[in-house]
Length: 158
Image (cartoon, rainbow, N blue to C red; front, top):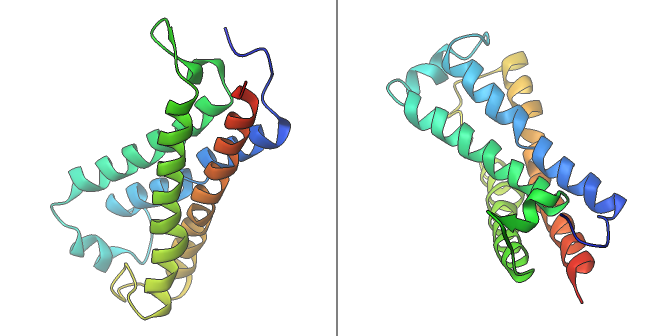
């Protein structure tokens, strides 16, 4: 059973946006790993032997993104049969949102702007543009998650 107050429309949009923002880069990473994407051979060679890491990173990223949906779904208010104290998702979600905002919205663009590309300059042209397009949505993950957490907090407050 969920709370008496339904999630706000804007909070639903934010939670779904946060979740969906994690998918393109995770999929791109796996496609790169298996050589499906042209122009990624040199990058793939840099990550030879790191298949477990790449899979793990992609799975954790999407799974954490999926937890965003718990802020607007009934399953996010209970663990087993116990109702969660409203502060647990607010604190965990808020700290997670701040962490991914720092990593992806602040640090990653700063690193790129100062010449530290994650592909180590192995990609060019269309493949580089495609990688950029797949990583662009992740910039929104933290801010959207913060909005979804704010919606959860407002809805669950006494």
